[in-house]
Image 1 (cartoon, rainbow, N blue to C red):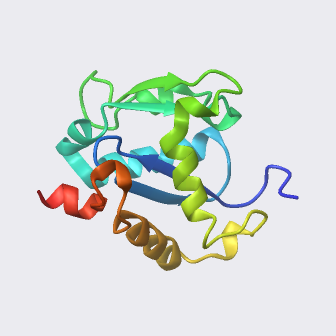
Image 2 (cartoon, rainbow, N blue to C red):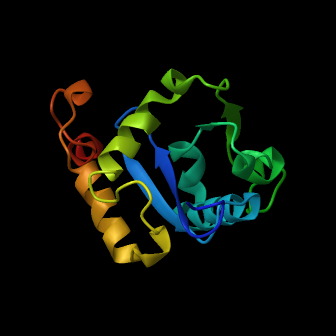
Length: 148
């Protein structure tokens, strides 16, 4: 059992083309989530707000710091993203996330120590998922949709 300790994955899904971003975090804490989003915002720069308009999360304790998640690291008072919480026990409100987790479980079975999985392997899984043809996209992949 994990008992809330150890590395975890933060999975972000772009809703229109189903592009996935998988980030390895050192722990399942509010600080780790905010730090991961800060790094992502720095990576994408000004285009972050175009790519991420909203984020919908479950009610886990790691997502309680809504101000930190919404706050931009860039100069100015603008928020980087609008955060929404799904209703408790309503997994259908996060269907894309549940399906993505199912794809990740093909490679990382439940109970696996994420800390032992390299960032290179996680990046490979992310690339595999983004190249996976989806019925909702007329059997195109997220990579195909991004190119068109």
